[in-house]
Image (cartoon, rainbow, N blue to C red; front, top):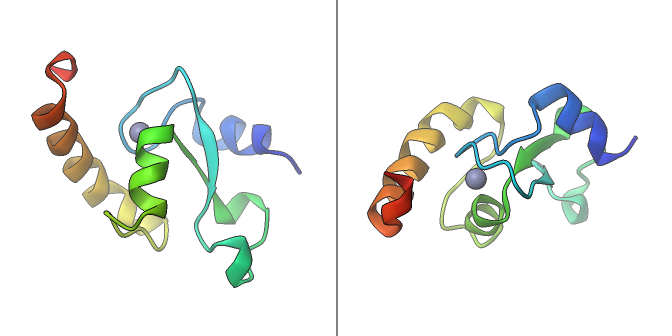
Length: 85
Ligand SMILES: [Zn+2]
């Protein structure tokens, strides 16, 4: 399995903020904690959101956390970047 399977399933854009120029796949349960490189353990993130999650500025444990994080991230980005509207 490769990352393209996750883009195919979850969309070719960040699942948190919708950014779609550069996307990466993120392991919900990190590989060093036994997380597998399989579709249910992957999500699609942009580099910004990926960094916020991996540096633990925002907590994301499973896909149920996605809706509340979407709201937080849109707020955060709006306060940081005027071009987000
Ligand atoms: Zn994002």
